[in-house]
Picture 1: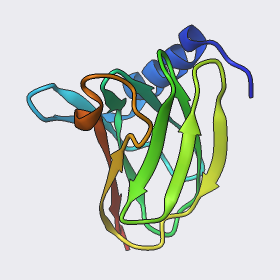
Picture 2: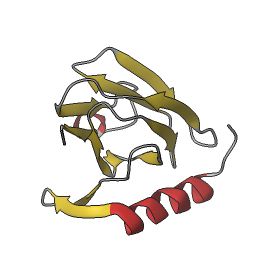
Picture 3: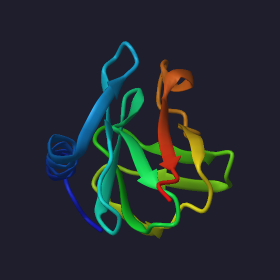
Picture 4: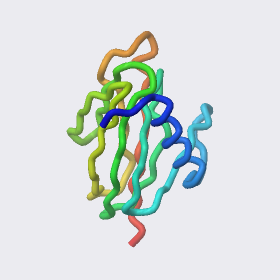
Length: 128
């Protein structure tokens, strides 16, 4: 979908304001735990994926990805999910995590001198 960096950043910030459960790292990156079935937003920006997500195993979410500055690559590890993320475009997919754990996000599209530090995280928890 077409979007603007400002619109996508506003949607992401609104989700953080509503569902933030804690902060992590010395960068104070928020971790959000939106309810199952909701829209979750993950924003690429130099040099981080923001915010961190905490999702429930076996529950579905609509994941929205976009960049607010440069082209980035979204690669979810150790799974084989790889998507190019462009400013001005919003990619949307339905995801249903099938295993709990901690999943790393790396940028696999060179985005500048700090590219090697551009990471993020998705936590999947089993609430059963």
